[in-house]
Amino acid sequence: MRIVRLANFVTVHTGGLRTALRQLGRGYQAAGHEAVLVIPGRRYSDKMTKQGRVITLPSAPLPRTGGYRVLAGRRELVKLLDSLEPDRIEVSDRTTLRWTGNWARQRGVRSMMVSHESLAGLLGVWGMPKRDALADRFNRRTAEAFDTIVCTTSFAAAEFRRLDVPNLVEVPLGVDLKLFHPSRMDVAVRSRYARPDELLMVYCSRLSAAKRPELAVDTVASLRNGKVPAVLVMAGDGTRRTALAYRAARLPVRFAGHISDRSAVAALLASADVALSPGPVETFGLAALEAMACGTPVVVNEQSALPEVVGGGGIAAAGTAEAFADAVSRLMERPRVERRGAAREQAEQYGWPKAVAGFLQAHEAVPAPAPAPALIRPAVPARPYLPSPRRTTPAREAGADEAGAARYA
Image (cartoon, rainbow, N blue to C red; front, side, top):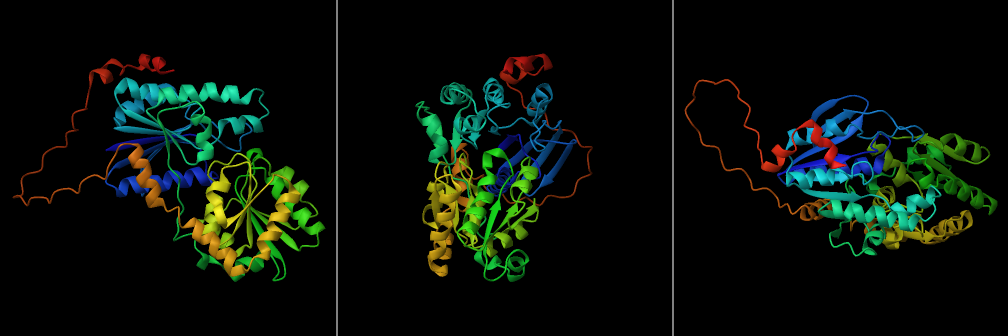
């Protein structure tokens, strides 16, 4: 089965979404399916990777978004989808790519939309009035356009559930339990950022308004005012970097930037005492889960989905510096072995194989059967390569012309 995945807002700095796409693609390939990922980028490319085929279409960056790009050429994308002839499509953008649900329906292809964020929550961050009514109208249209809506937590599913959406499925994402492990703790990494008597905290996410990184900085200030020798490492980059540097000018805050080496990220997380995840609209929080897999407890915003993911591996707090500082102090009062063991135990509930199986079930796809043993035949003279005939259906033929692209709005 060929599963074509479409995703926007993917850059070298989008850790959570990029990680999820990579792990799901690898899982689909391992199950015997053909995974194809289409994403925007600086230039065109088409290559085979461990997660399957990855096609990058040239797209201009969106202003003031930290380098985000979108697949804006609808006609070009229609041509590409027609040529790929997917059995399933999986879309990770319910704004600019929602039209692909109608494209799939015209072609008789089953479609899935993956909701990676709370739309009502994002509208609130952006200060939009009547956000719930606007989100309801948008979400209802999305649910009507796709065969299946997948949400990764009950928090993310709530805005669809209140609409009584019948095609809603909850499938948690996963974490790499081998890469992110307590054994990654590195004394050299820890000593790079903190003295033995200091409390090392880490924030690992984009530096954007939706993530509320300023709350992490303010938590350091609150702890220092309470005579707690806390220091903070901010691993990530984004549009808030300059403003945060000014905010942390007199505080022990180190900006590590985006860390592309996943092993280095694991070492940093495992070497910290506490991880902070202050975003109020997080719908899964992969960075928090990776920290717990490393044995590092987390403090999360109680308004987000993370309390249901974190469980006993951390503490949920109100979105204030004082509440976060108090939660950090309470975590550190627990015996080290106990708090780190609880974090790892909670993370072990979220392996990627389980997540892949859930997504394939939502696709109504089962592991492909193993190929039959090849028969040994006498050698025959080589013949010129001829492309296989294109599969066609009445629906495909009816919409194959370029002008038909406008119908999928």
